[in-house]
Image (cartoon, rainbow, N blue to C red; front, side, top):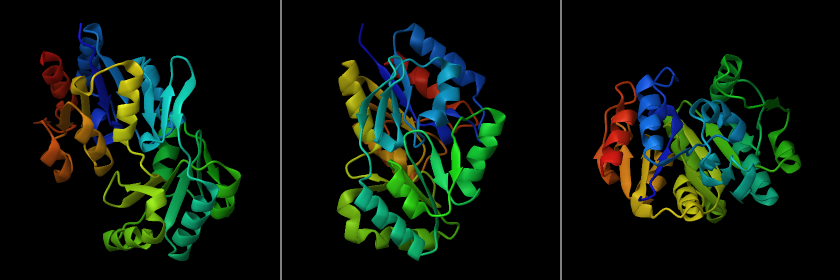
Length: 271
């Protein structure tokens, strides 16, 4: 039997617009697993942020976390791959962002650090209370100092003004060779160490599992999913996806409120 691997983004892809799991997705994944496919998540979140989904889907395949900065073997509870933002670069990042008065936060391997409950931090706070995530939130006075005490894996900047986001991307040019910059929404910037992405994580995972890249399906909706669609043998863009993903997709499925994820799974399993 040919080994197949299904790798999915979470928000806007696996989940509907109310952050719930459609029954169609549960049934489609059960079908895929019964037919021998591996299934895992590729997320900007760290491990604690995805554990409720791991439990729901009984995922045993290694996970791609923090936009490819971590590949974690959940079954054997060991890290296959991890790359941090070095302390000097983390300090530079925090300094630059602070000087622009932009709202930002960062993740280490198990938690998120922020100065107050806003934007995605408020979302995680809500999801934690609903039991949909389990991500410890640490409120600190100084994120620059915190980035020197903790091992930063990913920085996230959030600004409502999209012109500010465009400007902020430009100010990282002096240190961009040390960074990988992506986005999971028009209003944010996600930063990891250089040469890391969901795509690099998929390549690491496929190699670990012994799956040919031609037998890998990747599905997503936002720009931080683009790298994994580019390396997949079967690249799927959601109907609600950013247009850049649709340009590289082998298949454009329905949106996340109309069983798009499930339809893509069946299409892949028929190949």
